[in-house]
Length: 174
Image (tube, rainbow, N blue to C red):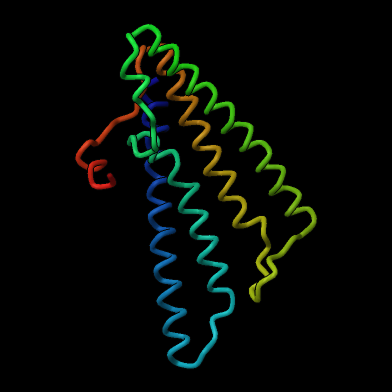
């Protein structure tokens, strides 16, 4: 079981790292587009590629952000409840969130499949096959679904979830 825990933690961390790489890719695309504009050149599809990288950054960061407590969680009600009802409400919340994530991932997979089957391409100058950037949505959604299910099962078995809270980091966003 310890091997599975390390594998999941590695997957969550790796998806967060890939999200960070996607953010760097957005920066580089913007800089290259600026340089191209200054030199009178054209970088076709740069805005589309930046959009794809932004979607990748979002979807790949979901699971890592969840486990680090960076998702917005309204815990006013949870903090006011005694331990028993609080645990039941957390199980219900994780269960519902996991079901929605799996539902999304299932239909996102079919969305990507049909994009690939019909050879859909973007309407911009780059004419990228859309199944390629859409696949990141399926991967990120799947990793989020795994993370939510992981936390749900951990909550049921151990009595608490695995979400950590960095109050210092969160205080900068408020």
